[in-house]
Amino acid sequence: MAGLLAQAQQMQEKLLSAQNEIAAAEVVGSAGNGLVTVTGNGTGEVTAVSIDPKVVDPDDVETLQDLLLGALADLSEKREQLASEKMGPLAGGLGGGLPGLGG
Image (cartoon, rainbow, N blue to C red; front, side):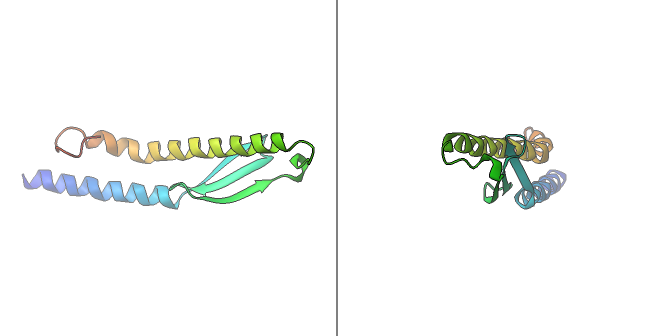
């Protein structure tokens, strides 16, 4: 039983470490071949937006809006990939032995 508890504690430490890595990570989503970029962290916060002046056209605001939405969607997808990479191996290890911790 002590071995099982030690294993659970070790998994919890790895899980916390992965969560901290995800939270600290910088993730960049882009659209229009980099004309619009959105930077955020792993917790979902958007920290910066960059828009190339070439796409700022007062007569065509819809294109800029579409590019911004595309960059936000790309950011979200990359954030999910990061979480999957960091948490994936841990989620598989929690499934079998400990009730309530299964993923």
